[in-house]
Length: 148
Length: 167
Image (cartoon, rainbow over all chains, first blue to last red; front, side):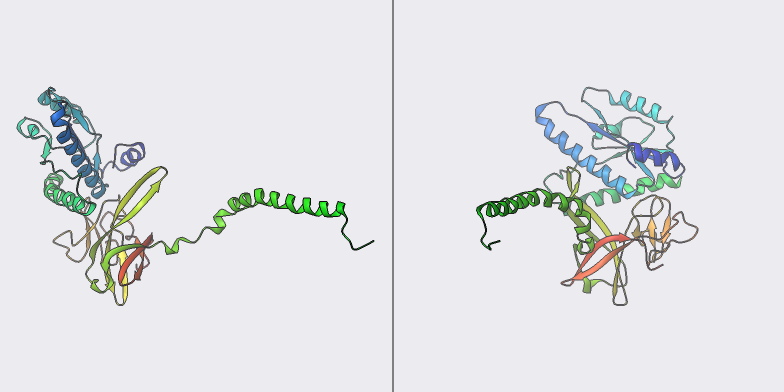
């Protein structure tokens, strides 16, 4: 499911089945030299999230991406986000990000960190297989949480 | 009356001819647009090629990915990637849609180790038999959709999805 009106309607009817929220976290670099890499990892993450949505449409809702700039305190940002998300009807909340800083902070939600892969120059086939590999690695993280 | 055409008659005929031609030039496209839906060719020939050789298809379903080039949704143009599960049944080739009939997740053949001969949906453990029949007691309420299949030059071509005809 995507965060749009029609999917949300379906979600509200099928709440007992769609119990997982995936939140993409994106670091927006503002210094010129790092902007390219930042855009590339955004591209990768959004492609991956789209792919997750396609595969797990009936169980996962993908939230709109949350973006922050380098000087924002992610401990505080993540803390506030988590507090708000605990009030949401989703039983499982996952953060996905390519920013390794999220792995070292103390946060309630599961953080799925992935190294960014520059997929922008790849042909579709290669891109597809990369995304598949990445999803295969994430899959156990989802299922182990779902079994609980 | 003489059989000769008078000047007046000649001009009349010419005017009618030219006038009629001009009216039809304006009216024809209108008529053409009005009956356009009738003239649209049936979309049966709209098969999309895949890279799967028909001879290589066995009785075990394999995943076939294919891409619909340049699909247009209003002004938005995109290539759409799609997947099918393809297997052989006698001399027929069957292609099933991987979209779970429960809530639209993607199913996998032998996706669950305890049921190696079924399609498995990872979202809510829905299961389907090889022909797409939903296993009773699991969430899905209907069988997997089927693709129209055509073998052209030895390669599997896939058409539109249709309700499952095997179950």
